Image 1 (cartoon, rainbow, N blue to C red):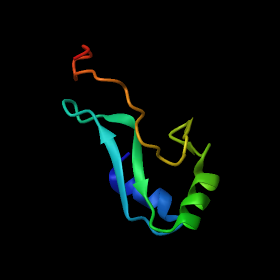
Image 2: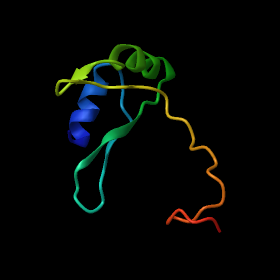
Image 3: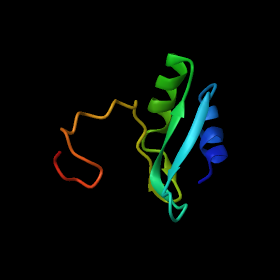
Image 4: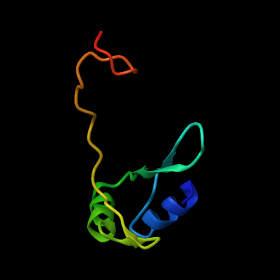
Length: 82
């Protein structure tokens, strides 16, 4: 899926500010998730209600509101505690 295809899918529910498919930085392949920003909260809720469980490429997608990452403690990128 491209960023534009993701945008087009969510645009069926309202205005899309941005849409980004997250890709592996080495292979360029999709990591299987993305982020969509919608400026109107009601349209965003409509997108969640309408598209959560939507079947795309023979697989249901999960649509939810993004939440900030939880604090993972004081670990470096390699996974070792600092």
